[in-house]
Image 1 (tube, helix red, strand yellow):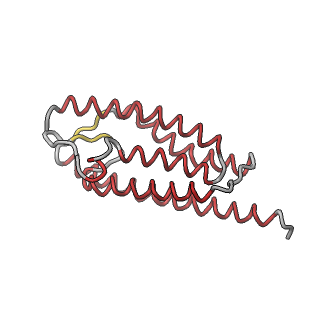
Image 2: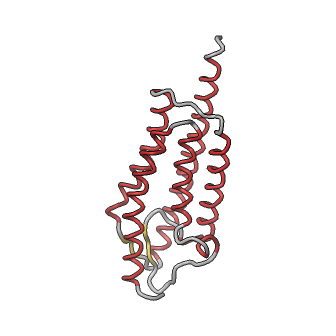
Image 3: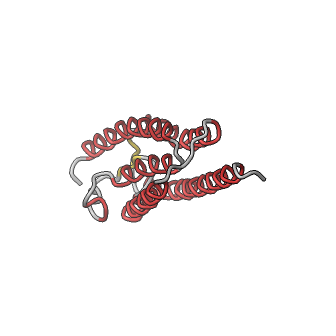
Length: 181
């Protein structure tokens, strides 16, 4: 085996392992979301802003596809500061799961509003209006740059920012329609 083949093999195995972890996370989150969604609807929750949801799905489908295309097809490679991006990615995971845990049975991938129930203002929500969105934004950026995929970092970050701009507006409208809780 040549000395140039080994780093590519290690990189591809690392990318595959990383994407398996991300996919497993998303699958667990979707199962949790389905469970909480059923319970929230049973308690009278209504969905708001469903029309933008396909854009969020697109972000999360395009991310691994773009990452693979850039690493395999365009030859993106991690830089010397790869470990900084890994630390940021891990930090984003911690923030995201803190937000999910804080919301508990109210966390969902959709905008489901329980009538008369005020927004959560504890945990990371005491410091940030949208900690989960901050975490996902950092996660997508850091994961891309971890593998040196700067095109994916730019494209996915911009698409995610657009999707979140729409979503945050939809959440704000939903909360205004609900009135004080």
